Length: 300
Image 1 (cartoon, one colour):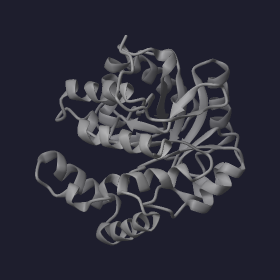
Image 2 (cartoon, one colour):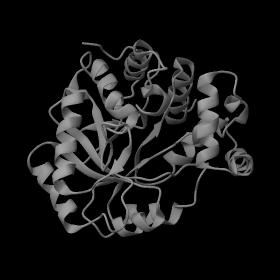
Image 3 (spheres, one colour):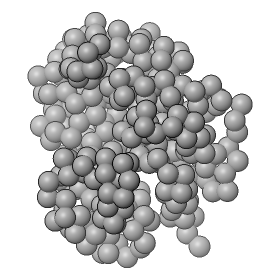
C-alpha cells in the first residue's frame, strides 16, 4: 500500500462520523480524465496528492464517460480505502453514443451509483452528490432514495452539487448532508446561500476553490493543447473572464497574502467548509497548492 510520505501535510477537518477529510480535495475530472492526458500521469497525481496529505478525491460518471472513475480506481488500488474520502455523482450520465443526459429517477440514481462503485472498485462512497439538479429534480422520491442508499451502506453522506442559487436555497430545507457550490475568493455570488446552508447544519465542500486560473491569467495562455482546453473552458464558464478575474485579484490583494494562500485563507475563514476541491494536471501546481494549505494552517 502507498503511504503518505510527502514533505508537507495538508490539514484536515473531522466529519460527523469521526473520519477526517483533507482541507483540499483533488478533482479527478476535466482534462485529468481525458485520454489526451496520460493515464500514468493521472494516477501519479493522485498518489502524490495522498503523499502530501490530501485524502479527498472527487469524481463522477460523466467525466470522460466513466473514464475518470476508472482512472481513479487504479490509484485507489494502491491506497488504504479507510484513509480516503471518495465522492462521486449521480444524475449526469453519458449514453452509448457519447451524448450527455440527465436523470434523477431514483432507480437510475441507484443503478448509476452501482455502476460507479464497480468502476471505482470500492464498496461504498463517502459522498454521493446529485449533479446539477433543478429545483424540480429535488423530489421526495430522490431524497428517499439517498436516505435508503445510506441505510444500505452504499454511501456515507448525501449531497448536492449545484451552482444554481435557486437550488441552493431549496436545499437549505432538505435532509441533505453536504453541498458543493461554486464558492471561492473568485466567486462570492452565493455567499448568503452558503451562510444559510451552514446555519441549517449542512457541510460545505467548495468547488473551483482556486478559480480555474483566475489568480494569474497568464496561466491560461494557449501555449499547448492542454492550456488551450483550459482557456476555452474558462471562457465558456465565464465570458466576462477578464473582468471577473480582475475583481478576484482585487479581493486577493485585500487579504494581503500571496495569491494561493489568500484564496485558501478565504475559504478557511468561512465557517462550515470541510474541504475545497481543485483540479490540476501538474505535479508542480499540486505541490504548490498543498504547501500553501500547510503554511496557512501552521503560520511561522
